[in-house]
Amino acid sequence: MLFKDYYKILGFETNKVSLNQIKNAYRDQAKKYHPDLSENGAESEERFKDINEAYRILSNSQSRKKYDRTWNSTIGKKKNKEKNAKNMRSSDSFIGEAFNLLFGAKKQKKEKEPKEKNKKPQIKGDNIETGINVSIEDAFLGLNKKISLRAVDRKNEKFCC
Image (cartoon, rainbow, N blue to C red; front, side):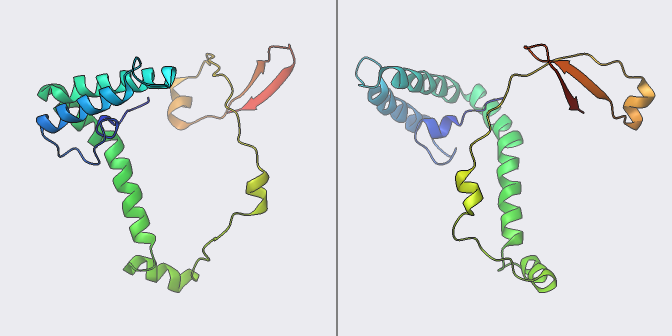
């Protein structure tokens, strides 16, 4: 699920803003990205839709509370976990120092390896849905099954799950 940061869309760094600040930011952003006034038609139209959606959610106190609660329970926890993990691994922290003492300091990469530069980005394929019959015991205990899917050109391709 794509979860949009409405505060960032309206130009805020934090969610600690008043209703008047939201209204003013909405007006500024709406003027800036209105499709009739902007040179980038399709891009500004999408941006304008996002701005209107952000304002609609954040201007209503009940929907704003629900949005903040959902944001904090999904995205906020992930960001905090990443931040805490980075802080714990840093050489300044006690755990980072203990880790470096036991396993040696990790060399920092200043430049990317040549393999990464020449690597092409992977292209995600289409999702495939299929049904598999599994007993309750197998589902509970875990079971590996091999499935064979037919490609569009009728060649067998095997994928292991």
